[in-house]
Image (tube, rainbow, N blue to C red; front, side):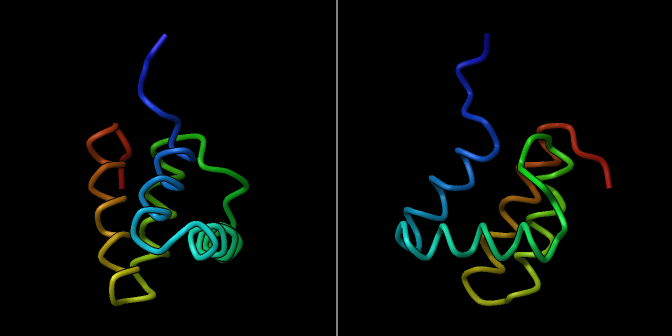
Length: 78
């Protein structure tokens, strides 16, 4: 069994550190809805999530870009 956190935990931890817990929860909720992703279960889910977050621009977009890089490193394909 891997000690690596799930993609969902990874996203919440990163967003929480940057934006605070309340804003992180809202960003995840809105981005999952907008991207039409039910959950962050796979690298492909993370890639799509990151792409939608990138569209917001600013720091949110920068974090989205980091998520897309992480997703590709974990095996997501464009």
